[in-house]
Length: 282
Image (cartoon, rainbow, N blue to C red; front, side):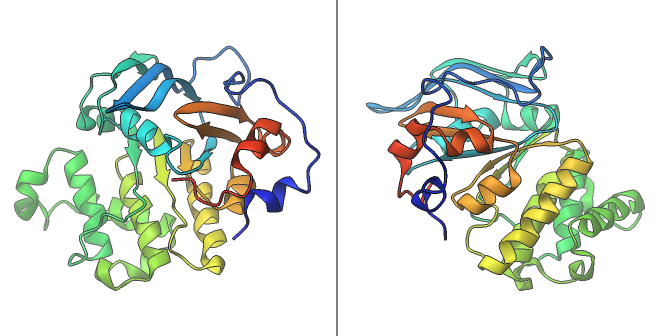
């Protein structure tokens, strides 16, 4: 697995500006960003896990969120997705304030996520896992048993989602019986079934073999790009980060250390100095 020293040693040192100063959108223009956080704060005891963070995700962008252990990446995503309540600041999604919205409210607004530790119903088939999410999305979960035989549109949509993710042959298999790489794809497929505008992916290639990583990322990025979905990826594999992202945001001690294109981040002295030799980004 590549470390910071592997890629940074090939690039001349440089700087794209003071730490956290970039924060510009990938599209560059004056359009409103899909997601904006303003001075977002989260304390855990005496620890400033997220320290006045201003973070953006643009429309149709694949963004990588990187940093060392305890940098604040997962906490930031938990705040945006509604799992944690911020101690200060504001979250805007599609120019609407969602700071106090529930997790369910944010899902309905278009924010979804997958997890590093895959959350699937192992005793249900792959098709059932996706269909269950669609039923939930449509508010029909209470009547699932009654609707299941007749809700052909739901099953058709679930089958099409599996096809998009290359899992059509696994539809009738129990989720607990597919390979680790397929479980990762199925977890993303379940999140995709919520019809997000913004999809957070938490280490989508962790726990899989090196040869599986590129096919997983090829599939995921192909789907999100073709459907116009923005994706924000927490990832520790620098090959994945630099090969698949449009923009990279580096965090350190709860703040934005750098924000730029892959080429800019390679040459950012603050990033290479602070994170050199780091292979963990949780």
